[in-house]
Image (cartoon, rainbow, N blue to C red; front, side, top):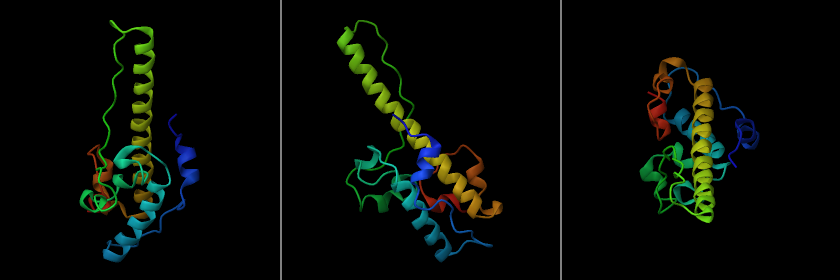
Length: 145
């Protein structure tokens, strides 16, 4: 069962992210990363090996490989298996697989939107232009331009 946004934020250790005043620098971006890692890691997922929550959403993929042998790959929207020639047991199993994949997909997207919102609150608009597009973003340094 996917998490609701309110349930996710309730589990965040960092309800708000420390505000950056002016142009981000290494120290402020590093502090932002640490807070986002905490929040992203607070919600379990099977993605990226299943041991680090959604940290792979904000962590550089090369750095993530130091945590897990399995890369964090953003899921695509799952498709339901057409009932076609499936037996009742096969249809039931296909539905379970679909619901699990849909839950991971929904959790991933909800987490991404929550973290983007936290970044937008913490960083001046001039530095967060990419967040306003639908361009997929995989790590924090791409959020802050």
